[in-house]
Picture 1 (tube, rainbow, N blue to C red):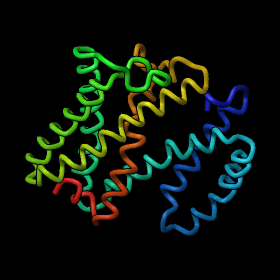
Picture 2 (spheres, rainbow, N blue to C red; picture 1 turned 90 degrees about the vertical axis):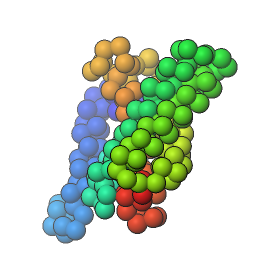
Picture 3 (tube, rainbow, N blue to C red; picture 1 turned 180 degrees about the vertical axis):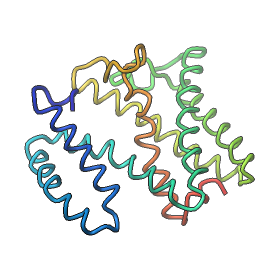
Length: 214
């Protein structure tokens, strides 16, 4: 909201979006709480009509939060959440190291000039290696984990590019100042924001988070 909504509406819009996400998470199966959330939802609809960037932001952050909570609550959920986080971290670290050591052609120079195809490949390979190591320690199937990790790694790197595009669209260099030298907290979460919903979708299709690594 602070990046995309200048002026006094930004804090109120951010708070409304956060409330909507929390209410969606807690109202499942509780009719009274769902009814109590209607005024906040009405405010969200009004803000959606006035501020489309807010709607995109609520979906961008809200969906992964809901996905991670749901994923953790399913069968084998702890392993599923660990897999998502380690794949994202592996993608980030592998891309950074390969990009620094190898360099080469740029991946998307118009969006993020620092990223290279070598970095993307390094991130993919390290994410797969980390996932296979995790699954082996859990007694799961390494082949299935490699496929899932490959998909999630590509999506995580796409989330990184999406965050870079949003910052360019908003005309800012950093998303925030909470973590000095890292371009903001959003830089540490951008891959999770795209990988988590995909992991939850796979778990839903196959019947539980344990199917991501078994």
